[in-house]
Length: 101
Image (spheres, rainbow, N blue to C red):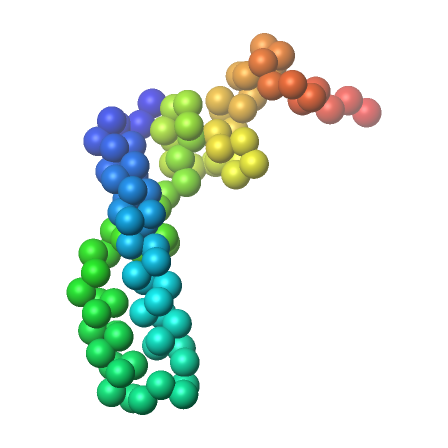
């Protein structure tokens, strides 16, 4: 089980991403647009830098929904390989069977 503080920190980052998503998108669009004047693009860069770092999507860590484990996660199931195996072995994941050949 991961530390409670690490899980909470990641949830806070997810909230911040949702909060600043539109602002960051608009500013990034201005920065990428070559038709906008150099001065306006530079102002957009400064405004983007003034936003909180945790508002960036890249700062969110994929964690297991059950254990909070940060590594070895399956995105499709949002859980770690260990939790996935435990649930699949006990038959709690519908449609998942062990491979046999």
